[in-house]
Length: 450
Image: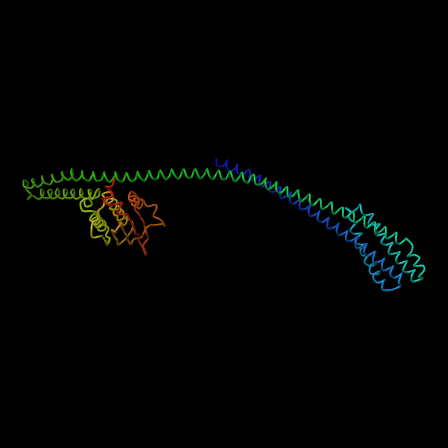
């Protein structure tokens, strides 16, 4: 299902990428056309300005020539000569501007313009030369219509060519507008076309995320439910185990204890009837007495391990003192103890849970910590009971104590009371176990509440 969803989402993404690539290519083609249109418009405008300049220079040349002929003033020849030089340069530009292959339709007109300009300049030169030879001949040439006809032909040709250039500018402008409009339409269409697969992909991704979220929430709910069930089961098994231990301890105390006491009484009666002066009988008698005493001690230790009688009869503090003393004495540990002055009024379930935590912690220290000193501290506040077990051993390997079954067991014993359990590293070496629980959850009154 997951692989199918990925392919299903990938398809619109690929379509969107293809559309983006197509739109990019189309935009590039359109941009190139726009650039060509702008270039053509600029070139046409440049040719139009060139024609205007040519006509203006021819007019300046004619004005200078006529002014000189009519007045004889040499100052009129300066603008005439300047116009002649510039006309020569502009003719080269005209030939270049209209010499391109795409201007083939204008080749003949450009050649005619150059011819007329040359004819006009030649006519002006002849007029000036005649004027210098004799005023009457130059005036006669000026009064003829030859120069006027050449000028009219030149003006008409320039006007025609400028009209052609205006037409080209108009056509190229329309083409530019059409291309620009097409580009805008293409851009809008492409944007919409791109949005559709993107929206589709987003919808599919969102739906997949929702599906995964639903599955994750469901799994989390199931895990939470199973964890709660396992926690309740573990708490129930601990209670059943403690109840079975207590029942077994009572049976051992009542049944086995009664049998051992009866055997001891019978042996006491037999003692008066035996001749203990004989070495062999005395030896066997001492062996029987020692075995009986060992059996009674073993019975007592087993009963205390199953269900410490001090806890039920004397309270939590006395039971912890006895247990800590037994373990530390056997392991050769120096014990420091701090207890409140009064015995806390705890429920039986809370008392055995705290006792087992101390028992488990001290057993772990004796077996694994390689410590030399242990501190056991019990403090009763106004609203909270606090227990601390600290050692100066090597601590625990690694950065976390999550993998320790003993730690897990101690932490789990506090779950029914919503207690807090923490394991802290002690500098320079050692571990500290902190337990805190509200008195309202562990008091005798709490255990009797409905």
